[in-house]
Length: 237
Image (spheres, rainbow, N blue to C red):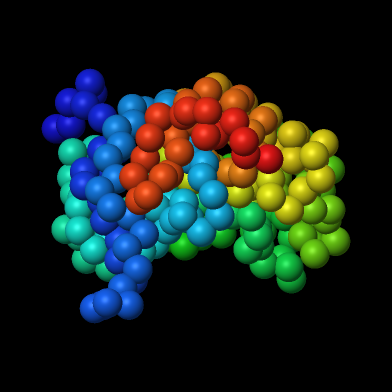
């Protein structure tokens, strides 16, 4: 049984290398990170330093070259591909810069999808999806095809989809990157509200200094390692 005082996520010596030999590119060079349930953190850094790569590994969408990601006491990469897929579906929510919704389906149908993949009942998932879409301010858009929604509305649907099964962890990769400042601010506030009301652990890759500041804890990816927020982060747009 997991000790409730132990970290929710612990990253130890994480390395990621692309390619072999002299042409190999080493993106992550020993990343360490500890997060408790309910924490919220911004990961910032210059373009191309490996922020999205790190997020994808934390979300088990990619494998590290070396190192461990421990979730609730277990090294996730000791699991099979099928087990990792189940872990992602049950415990992790994802929000990306490009929302990856299914345009031919309505808002509520998109939000129902994670539960349907778990073979939960349609009525249960419709009720869950309706409730969370109401929470994100889209009760009046339940049956709208997502292709007819605004960019901000689509991103709200993506947040609702990520949280419909109440995962303990939400990973967001530039969730406001394609939005105007006002709409981006609304989405950022929504993520923070979900952290406050649900205790969801937030890990957000962002270029927005404002969002990083609001998250409270900033980690800067420099030379393949994470550093606690410094003056280097202040220069981000």
